[in-house]
Length: 86
Image (cartoon, rainbow, N blue to C red; front, side):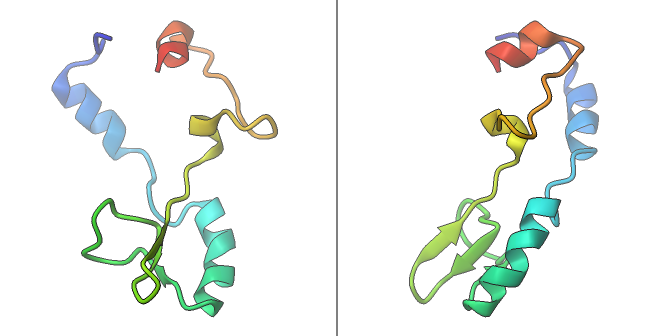
């Protein structure tokens, strides 16, 4: 698939996307912290959202967009073919 943006445009677009402290993360943060998980741990391969080094558990939270959650997913109105393929 060919990207329709220049490297500079893509970099700027991606830099505007919030990747930490999202609403799903905040919701789980309170629960997992009580269980001993660390929120946004440093130095762990893959950069998990939560981790428990003692038990070697990593938790990744992906948003509704990437999983096409039937409850929250909103299909992009512009450049629809690009996002369907993606």
